[in-house]
Length: 188
Image (cartoon, rainbow, N blue to C red; front, side):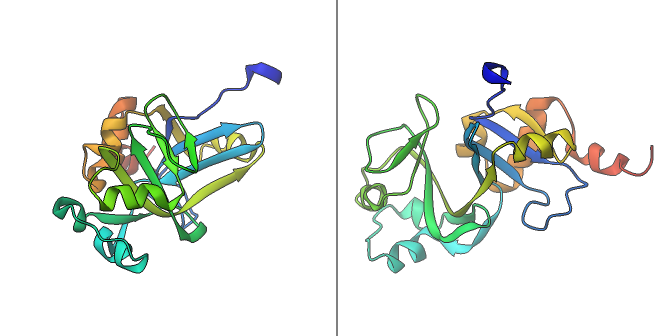
């Protein structure tokens, strides 16, 4: 394929209603990296029963910002589920960051959480435990099998919308009403 490969970096994956894998049913995934080695993304619409204040207590970092204290940590995917991943805007400079775009990064180093705790972290953060990974060509195969819809990502969906509306908001970017999509399955 050479250079004709389509990179889905900075795209949303929208799980089709037929998605059987319980890890990914009804998920919206933001793809942070996609190349010939595979793909890496985080689920962005599955908050878990843990707040940022609880997470910060576990890692012994004080969290000053009261708005953030009640913010939920998200299930990011089935890989490295005990590890924190911070999706953030702006990019900034942290010890271990994957730059996704000029504006967005995925950081795994603790320094970003310390900065958030002190109130001088990035303006927007979404914290996940775990991530989703695909080996070389695996994501392409799943898309070819209609497991996922893809659409160019809008960061506002990640950072300005509450978790429960991110999936329908991503569908709107595609011009599809998700409720109609799921209702029509099996009634063709």
